[in-house]
Image (tube, rainbow, N blue to C red):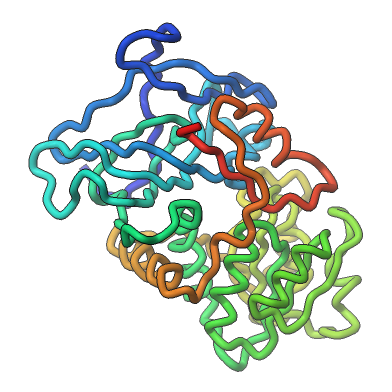
Length: 345
């Protein structure tokens, strides 16, 4: 069997009646825009596994796309269990696990179905946080491996003009990380003034407000940056943003797809890509050792106070109101940046 990098896995649907012994609340996406609470068996940590009692789970853009039904069926089909930005505490350790113990505060990666009260996973999926570190600030550490990898793929340094399209949850974390690479200019765009103010605080040299999702980015930035950008990182949900990203590329540029990994319904001009000598990169680490290394680096940036994962949290909603949490996160023309689901309330 070929050895491939670890991927995200979906937990089982071992449903139970409400109030049954050894049952827990779990959120289930039944179909587009229909997410509700069901009850499932509380999993037990098996050989080489730990169980995490979940406190906070963030609603990621990938969760939102699944909720909207804009992800292709090969990515996700319904019913599905969502949620992967985890902050919790280990409450059970299975046999043959070393270095992890009951009571450790942790974040997880490559786990799905975390809109629940408990999940089980392997030590590979876990990073331990200091006991005094606030749990609210932990869940977003999960996105940092992909963000650090994006900056590395862009080969960002003092000679590069960098454009980050979108300053939502990931965009604001990405702005903080990319600023540490000292680009010549760090230009960001977004629909909302609030997000752009935070981006400026986090290290953006130029901020531009985009009037609508259909606005051409180059129409807004072209006067100041007529030659385009050396590195373009779209942090948008739908794949159509790749067309706009390509227009923003200079000759020999790199498009690093942190976002825009949904379905692209607009024709993409590959001849334009060819003429510009541009390159496209995806950001998920290709080897398990890379994921673990970037996971540690990201954790350290947050623990050391270099990257802020707490200031962008706007709403905290209990798991029992998961439908409300997704409705708020999905609301158009809203300045809500990040919603945390409280799995203990």
